[in-house]
Length: 249
Ligand SMILES: NC(=O)c1ccc[n+]([C@@H]2O[C@H](COP(=O)([O-])OP(=O)(O)OC[C@H]3O[C@@H](n4cnc5c(N)ncnc54)[C@H](OP(=O)(O)O)[C@@H]3O)[C@@H](O)[C@H]2O)c1
Image 1 (cartoon, protein in one colour):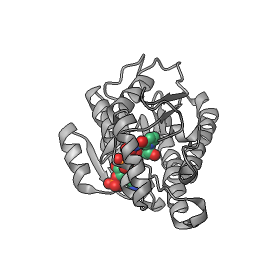
Image 2 (cartoon, protein in one colour):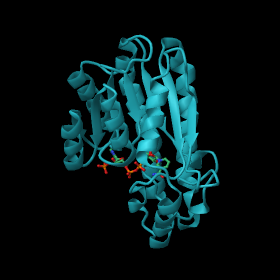
Image 3 (cartoon, protein in one colour):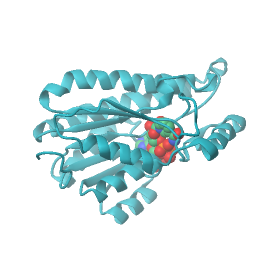
C-alpha cells in the first residue's frame, strides 16, 4: 500500500448499524475500502452490509469474550485488516448524585474497555500489513464537560483520548497511526438510551438546531486516513457553526 490510496484496504467499523458508524462504513466503501461492520442488531447491520457490499458481524462488543471473534472474523472475511474504527459508544446521562453505578460501568465497558480490547485483538492483523490505522471516536465532551449529567460520559471520552495517545506512543514506530475524531453534537439517535425524559429531550432539542451530520464526521475520518502514510493526524475536533460552544456531544 503506497501513498494515500484507500482502494483495497480492509476496515472493521464498530457500532455501524446506524449513526456515525454507518456513515463511516458508507464513506469508506465508496472510497474503495473493503468493509466489515459490527453492532448488536443483526437486521440493520445486514441491511447496510447488503447496500455497500460489506461483511456483517453481529455481536455485543461489551461482552469482551465476543471481541476477539468479531475481529478475527473480519480479518478472515476480508483477508486481513488495515483499518480499525472504534466507534461503538453509548451516552447515558444522569446526575452523579443518583449513583447509577450500572450505567457508569456500561459506559466505561463499551466506550473504553471494549475499544482497548478491540485494538489489542486487531493489532496482529494491523502489524501484518504495510501500515495500519486505528480511528477512535471520542467527543468534544472530552475537552469540555458539557453538563453535570454528562460528566461520566465525558470521562469515558477523556479516557479515549488518553489511551489514543498511548496507542500512538506504542504503535507509531510500527507504522500504525492512531487518529482521534472528536465531534460536538451530531444528528443521530444517541439520546434514545438516555432514561430521564427531560435530559433526553434536552439533547434532542440541541441536536435539532446545533448538530452536524454523521456524514460530516465520516468525511473527517476519510480525510485523516487518506493522508500520506508519514502524516499522522492526531485529532480532529469538529462541531456545527451553530453549536457555538465546545463541550456538548
Ligand atoms: N451523536 C453525537 O452527538 C456524538 C458526539 C460525539 C461523539 N459521539 C460518539 O460517536 C459514536 C457513535 O455514536 P452515534 O451518535 O452514531 O450513536 P448511535 O446512533 O446511538 O449509534 C451507536 C452505534 O453503536 C452500536 N452499539 C451500541 N452498543 C453496542 C454494543 N454493546 N456492541 C456493539 N455495538 C454497539 C449501536 O448498534 P446496536 O444498537 O445495533 O448495537 C449503533 O450502531 C459514539 O462513540 C459516541 O459516543 C457521538
